[in-house]
Length: 206
Image (tube, rainbow, N blue to C red; front, side):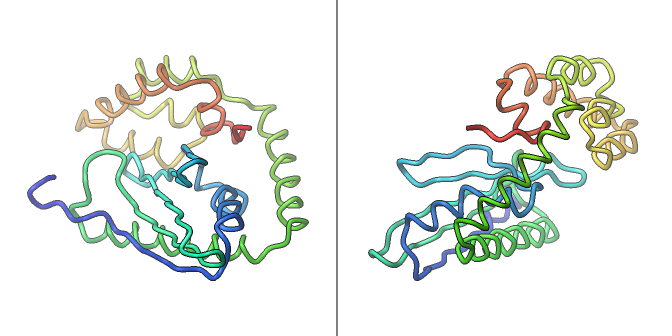
């Protein structure tokens, strides 16, 4: 841990609802806000990790751990961690705590919704995916752009991440964006097509 690192923001909740119901809610947060993308999940251990990009950073991971406290009570542990490095500024912690508030509200909202309402949201999302698929982004193109023109954020513009692209362009003189773009290049290369589509083409994994 860095010398001035701030511990990852965490929150523990106890909900009067079964683990089975909360598990379904934890898997569907993207339905309420596409800013949060399901990065990984482990159904056996009831662990779900979402990712969110942020201005001037690689973004954060949001870990959700569910535990059955009793038949009708579930423990929810939420932790926010940076994708790279640790938190070392107060405003970063503020943003992280906002993520916790958002995730908590989304879990509550989804838990209160009926199966029919969830199905309607999924149908709506599927329609939006079909529209986005017409302008599907290519993984290899993104990798090539990040390698040759990543220092000025061209790959981010290509992926539709205009704000991040502008940030790369604004700070290109520092060569930091070029370094981050190199990381992006390897990330694209080693990311599976399914994961790439999930992140950049709004296609959810089955």
